Image 1: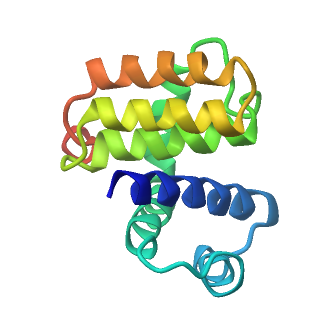
Image 2: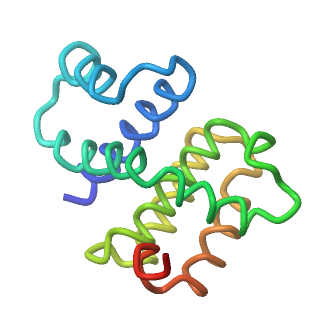
Length: 142
């Protein structure tokens, strides 16, 4: 289960990255990934949950990201780190079934695998601040 969720997070990152760069609709990119690039079964549900959740709440997620990434504009954060952070923030704010420590640790691992040598510490710092301050879903604070 944990390995499948880790792989689903990796796929969600790749899909969100492609959506951001190509401006293709999420459903088209998901179809491409699951039909041609990664036809393995068992990952689709959680991957879709992450991709659609980030896209649905992206305005709120980016608002939180701007607020907690002091001295970093959203545009200055690399596309990889930005999308890892979006996944992590989505999990922290909108997935009460996932423990915050798990969300943060998984985001750090994504940063180590796909980001730069400084990505993991950067991601940890931002998500840790959000986890300590934002305990309830954003929708309750709106």
